Length: 262
Image (cartoon, rainbow, N blue to C red):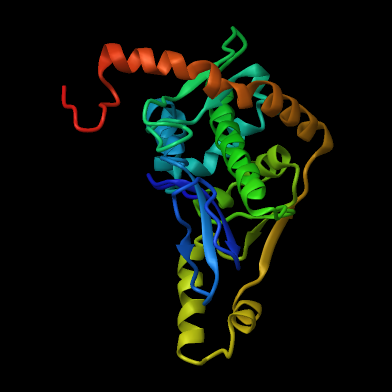
């Protein structure tokens, strides 16, 4: 996970060539003979930056006074709201996709009521992102035939205890973060150590250079709420809203069709 304006992804490494989305190939892994499968949520944790810019003035002001990042205060918003955000559901397609979601896709928020505040909106953003990643997990399992039994979460989002617990609850799986949040640099160091012969294998380098940080176990009550909302609502949102996205595209012209400029 990351707070920068980039994609949020679910990554798995396999010994066999597998296309999670047909005709979209996996990446060659750093480990020879392995493949890195990825399912992306375009923009992803950019949505936290969007929330900060549009709705996070109190946190920005407090951060400026204390010399910290505004995101450091966002866990306070999470604890104000119960799992499920009192029925506020977010589909995080803030940028068009390639297949599912397709190029017509748009973001959607449904279930608003008079109880909802900006804290509910923030939690709904993180829940929507977690639902989308869980959907990617299930696609990966179907295509590869290999179940995913635990999660490793890295990037800026992993610094949030609230986001880590929410992720474990939505997936119904234990979620661990590494001892450093920005794991890309650590991965590059592991590659370099093996390439230079400082460690004889990737297994040795990983064992010697990395360690697990905090582990978050799913809360059964929250997990039950998320399981129901994911299966009965989130999984149906795109299919139900897709025809309306197409109509919006026809009227407004955004996103533009390939090769057509308006």
